[in-house]
Image 1 (spheres, one colour):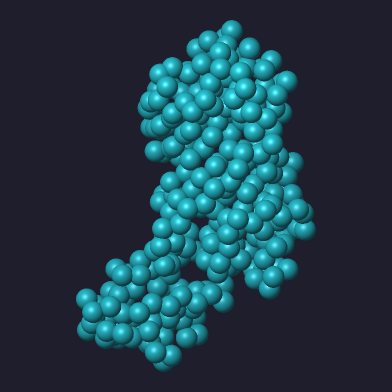
Image 2 (cartoon, one colour; image 1 turned 60 degrees about the vertical axis):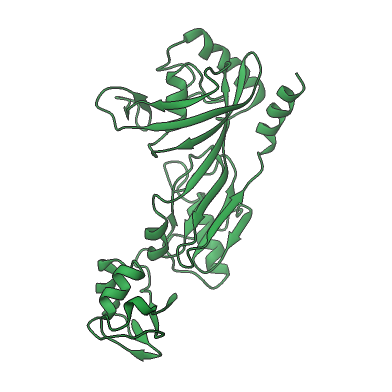
Amino acid sequence: MIELSFTVPDEYNGTIVKVFLRRYCSISARLLVKLKHVPMGITCNGVHIRVIDTIKTGDKIKIQLPEDKHPAIANKIDMPPIIFEDEHILIVNKPYNLPVHPSPGHYDDSLANAVAAYWENNGEGGRAFRPVYRLDRDTTGLQLIAKHAHAAKMLAGNIDKEYIAIVSGNVSPKCGTIDLPIRRCEGYGIKREVGDGGERAVTHYKVILCSDNISILSIHLETGRTHQIRTHFSYLGHPLLGDFMYGRINTQNDDLTSDCNIIGKNLISRQALHCANIKFNHPISGYEMNFSAELPDDMQKIVDNISHI
């Protein structure tokens, strides 16, 4: 069972436990209800305490997080390289051809299965799998996972991610913002398209390297729609290299996207997209944290070739 510990500051002297936990510790109302059913769920200086009891400056308040009712299913497949881990979060460098969640054709060989097996082997089995965001199956890079519900709540929507993408064509202007709504592409399952009635989607980009027919982009997302980067750049006629779902359909320039398929087939076998950097405040300590992951070999080779043109 995971324990969280907090010290009461001066400004909460004389307040009740509920106010301190909700306002200062950002504990959700739902979790507070669950803690009532956990033995020694909330303690003050080692003594069980109720949410209506009063606390004072310097008191040590601890909560025992309840066990997860729906733990991830473990399966011993290769665990991706671990970038960072503590009792609250786990960060891995996800390879391509690895879905984050179990899905059709990948019910027992997803990142969720690998992480569950890793935790089980380390005596931390029984956890639910809580990715703070989700990378596509063939997108590589930094995947942040919360180890408990409170960490997931604190991190949700508060991660600054930088993606590196390799797209077809010479993107112009060299930096800009794409603000175009994204909706489901009717009849294509998970596929998305730009169109009226979709959800607002905002993508900020900067060209960091380019040749006549390939551009390397640094991308930051203001929103987090499914396939947002792939959909936006496909619509603008600059689909990601190797992205055969978005390389031909729903683009403004058929000649350019045909060229993309030829280039992508020769250089890379999946969409050229990598989550390279993440920045966030730790869900418990509040300290700013920064992590990076180098480009995988298939993308790095393309970058090296452009660098020597």
